[in-house]
Length: 325
Image (cartoon, rainbow, N blue to C red; front, side, top):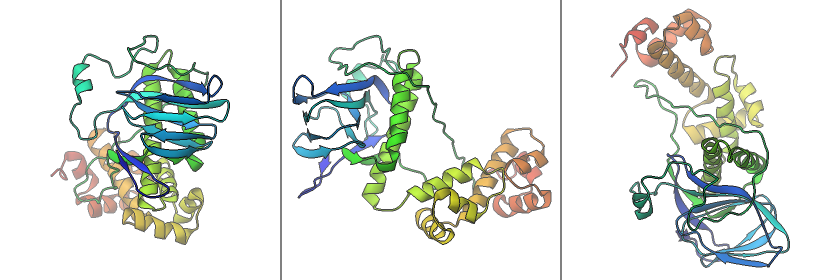
């Protein structure tokens, strides 16, 4: 674990998120009522906390002030000390993650028989139970795999291992993080696998917060723009409409988008439409006009030209595998 030096220390930990977490416990933690100070460690589990109060948190030797909306991700074995200011309530998840170096740990090697998600009714030795679950309807996060298109520039891939601050302000992400964790808590008693999916989604959002803090680059508008584009590929897409959805001006989005992706908004839309079309042509039996319409290109002649320009072959040839490398 790395801690920056000087005043305003910031601890960073490598976190690997290409595999789902092994959730051990989650719920609502209530502290500060019996005593104003807690000191403990979880030897082989990560601690994810979303705070609703102000307090002092020390992780090993680094002191942090936590406030409502702050989130912490504490690695296994770290010595944790809280100093509360009265009743203090937070959402928490205790979990295991794959080692950041890609190699199995001694703990993991000794516990190969464990499932990905523990039965919440069982208690493991040394497990900490912080609070009961609440009732909120579950929400399953989705995902999408982008296939490799030889003739098309690919969307930048977020690395699976990221340096994440131990403590950070979740800012505008706080409502979404709270929703994900509350839904994980609600799903935990009956569908622990679903709860793990919610926690995994929350971890990716926490990691993205760390990426923004580490690079100092403005990703929020670009991320919103990309999400809007991906959900509207079958319809009419214009740069002004995407900019409105992202909450920035046309010109500002254009500059941000090129800085973050290396491409224009129009170029990105064109690429993603053809990538999706290529997938449907090769992996489905949908008629070519249906494929064209499903990626927002209603004119067959324009669709034919776009496939030839970006994939090097006409749609029928792409379907036959002519563009395979």
